[in-house]
Image (cartoon, rainbow, N blue to C red):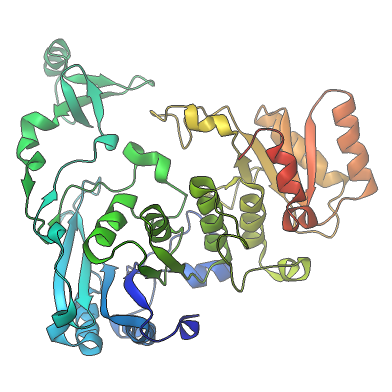
Length: 447
């Protein structure tokens, strides 16, 4: 797809490609083919650089002479990446090695210190043409208040009690230093102004960014299930530094589309590229959820699955992801042992529910199960199995997606509805493709 982008037409490029970390990200994707696309395994640094080099060369070609390039990586291959980028961009056009230092939960091994940072290399196409930006010199450095908790004493974070004795916990409780979750778990409070007050003063923006939190429970609302998703605030800062309204932003490994969301939010034009149909569906849904942007009207989705014939050929787990997301639901993270439920559909009211220790959208009881079958016709046994799964999960209503349904299957669905036992709503793939199935659930109060 990069070959379709004209020479020197992009103002800012940010990429967050695989890190060669020898890990397989299977939280969201479970199919073998999709694993090959997202598997963060290249065997060695040489193979990884061989994979990335031709792609970066294309990005260099499409970047304007006045443009900037950001490459997000970590310690696994950063040294090799730096050499590659020096060769492509020229060492003299290297601008910064940005350290994103974040709070995290990773514990050190017996011989290794805990890793708490990632690296972002910043290059210019031509450093002599790079225009100064006041944000390089003065920036409000501090915590994102939306990620903090607050009481009458001020904003605070929480941490585990560790080896605190019961006597110490009682003393801290008396001092108002213990935070209780809705499940009764206790944490120690520490107030930002007490321990990190200096961070809130304006100061020059350096190449160490320690004020942007990783995605987690504190900013759960941003999460899209994508395993390597980055916080919106990180992308917003990059856009602030090296772009202005009307500029074109490109992310060639855009995953769930955080760079696109940041660009749209701040008046930039954007191009996103990703190898996964699932990721493209997540991006499409996210752009609708956050900006009410409609595919085909507000943006174009190129080379995407368009018809039933294509969908019959893709692997089963990828088909499940496509169907659930096309309906507006959230696919299960685990693809094995899902007990007959492939995804969940949440009502619009989920946004009004607080997310304190209650899972992805707060109130865990406000969802409807989704079952998907990549069959010409789902039969009565399939409906019976979904019925059992719904009863086990204490659900009264659910959605079943297939290419079509047998006569026996439809009879059982009607019987369940008539007798008031369960409501199973059949959705065909054709209905998802022409949006009639989506409109059916919209009318029932879903996003």
